[in-house]
Length: 213
Ligand code: SF4
Ligand code: SF4
Image (cartoon, rainbow, N blue to C red; front, top):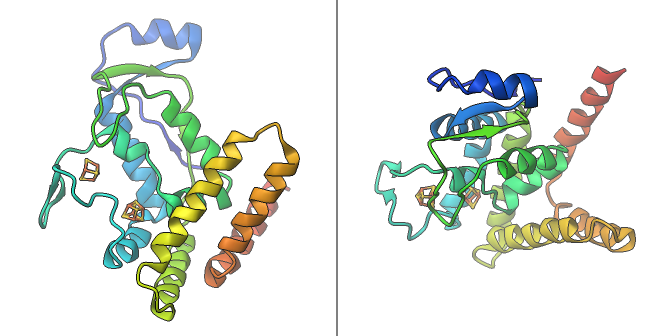
């Protein structure tokens, strides 16, 4: 399992004290952004974004940091950590959503389309993700097909928002198993048209299980 945790070498000396006592790592804001971006590329987020943007769903729409033909001019920790419904579902289905959330909960100063993250701060837990671009490729193909099949413009964007809400609700009812089952069922129904993705996902979990035996 690749570990997306790079020790920042350009650090003040206080690092060794914290590492030896608390297993904490002093990390720079730029490093944490790189860790996030690299992890998303490994996960194949760009493939899903391509379909989403083509269908008018870009989450960067109207942002003052967005430059024509260049993209984001002001990469920040907040936008790197933030997941839309599609990416949230990708990490939920692969069992990596908690890992992602936990990692970013250690990064201070996140805001809307900007951050107040200090240049250096401490993190305790590295980000451990996996590479599954084949899953994203399958999901992107499913989304494109769904959008072409439905007359309603922006069908997949509405779907994205529904999935997003349901996954967020799961987090709000950790101690209510009945409600959790209901929400998990909703997510299953909403994601049932992702046929290619579900096939790849079965294979992914199968391989994961075999690697643990
Ligand atoms: S909403 Fe999600 S899929 Fe669409 S462009 Fe933003 S991150 Fe990518
Ligand atoms: S700041 Fe965030 S919303 Fe704005 S262009 Fe950059 S990534 Fe997109």
